[in-house]
Every structure is written in C-alpha cells, then in structure tokens.
Amino acid sequence: MGMFTKSSAFAGQTVYNAKNGYRVSQKTPWGNPVVYFFSLVLVGICVTPVLYIVLGGFRTNSQITNNPSGLPNPWVLQNYLTVVTSDIFWQEMANSIIVGVCTMIGVVALGIMVSFVIARYKFRFSKAMYALFSAGLMFPMTVGITPLYLLIRNLGLSNSLAGIIVPQIAFGLPQTIIILVPFLQSIPDELEEACLLDGCSRLGFFWRMVIPLSMPGVATTGILTFVGSWNSYMLPLFVLSSSDKYTLPLGVQMFSSEHSVDTAQVLAFTSLAMLPALICFTIFQKKIVGGLTGAVKG
Image 1 (cartoon, helix red, strand yellow):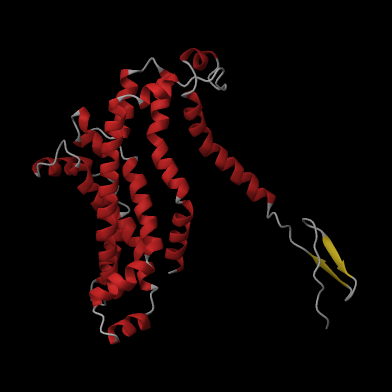
Image 2 (spheres, rainbow, N blue to C red):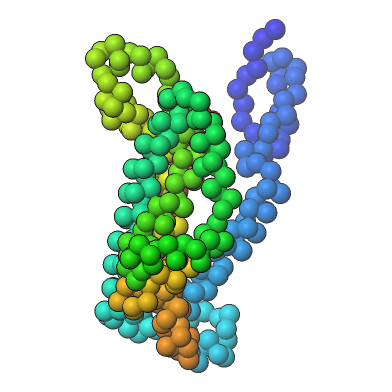
C-alpha cells in the first residue's frame, strides 16, 4: 500500500488523494468553534470589570454619572496623577510588597522542605501527613479568623506586618505541598542513588538536584502565593489598626470611604492597586500553567 501524499487543505475540507484513491478528511486547524465561543464569553466576563475600572480612572465624575458605560471623552490623567503623587499610596504599596515577598519566601522555603520529606522519605505516617495538608485546603481563613486573631494578639503580633505574614505562611503551605510533592516524587530514584554513590549526602542531593529540578513547581507556588498575599483583605482588616501599616486592599477601602463622592479617583486608585498583581500573573502565566501541568503528570 502506498503512502499518502502530503497535501494542504482549508478548515474542514475533504481532500481526494489521486495517487491512492483515498478520501482524507482533514481536521480543521482552528479547533472546535463552540469551544472558542464559550472561551471568548468567559474571557469577556473576566476582562470587562477590569477594563471598566481602568478606563473609569480616565474619566470625570460627570462623565460617569451621565454615561456609566461610555468611554472617556475627553481622557483625563489627573485622577492617576493624584494617586501616584500621594505618599499614602506608595506607603501602602511598600507594605504590600514586604508582606507578599516575605510570605512567598516563607511558603516556598518551608513547603519544599516538607514536600521533600513526604515525597522522598518512607515512614509510617507519610501518607497521613500528606492527607493532613490536603485537608488544610478545605479550611479557609475566614472560618478561623476570630481564634486566629486572638492567637496573634496573645503572641504580640497585632498591628504589625509580621501578624499578617506568619498566618499567611501557615495557610499557604497546604497548596504549596500539594503542588510540590508530585514534582519531587517524579524525580527518579536512580538519580538519587547515583548521587549517593558519588559521595553526595541527602542534604547535598536536596540542594544540588531536587531544587533545580523542581523549579517549575517552585515558581508556580511562589507566584500564586505572592498574588494571593497581595489580594488578601480579611486578615489585614482584623490585624492592622494603624493606617501607616495598611496594605493596598485596606488602602483601597479606606480611600473609597474618604473619597466616596469622587468615583473616578476611587477607580484610578483601585486600578493602580491591582496592577502589580495583574502584571505579575500575566508575565508568569506560562510558568503557572506549566507548573500545575507538571504536578498533575507527576
């Protein structure tokens, strides 16, 4: 039987192979249009509120009142300039960066060490420990916010950034461990045995082989932790009482209360507050998807 000759076709076209007398039905290169339609609908639902907030910052209050769904006409930069030139905004952004970076470092450092023990060490309660961390995903911070606040106050961490960082590290560990354990389990045992034969200790194997090989998962958990910490609102609301310690989510709420009649400036402040997390998530989107895909395959 002869081989099919290579031929090109448009989407959904049936091609007749004259050499062998076969009809070859080629699949459309664009995929299923129904899937694309619903995907575009979901994208529109997610993107429309963000665009409304960003564009609303370029409008005046009269424009928003007269035509709430219209485009800026004319475009006004004063709202964003007022927010950018205020010291309060930069102080709150600095607090959010400190909390987000410290939380990310703590979650990744502790998470990869715990995941290494669960994935690579064989002991009696390893599966029970993994199940315990999995159950932590079903315990949201909202449920335990009152006893958590009492514990933070008894530890002397109330009204401090440390009172936000430490609980966020604890609540971020389950997700990190769930993602990293499959990565570490997928590392071949023969690789570890070869390292041990070369005189490398378990700790050396961890630093030289485990961490570099698990970087996709580490990057994924780090980005997700940072974005989640940046958007955290309830815990800072309970812990912080001084305005100079506020993070950006609290700053948005306070700014909205103080400038309730200035809707355009509130929209400008809100868009600038969510911009860093949005940029971070957009830039590292492929790493997040790749890391989650690797965790599922592992």
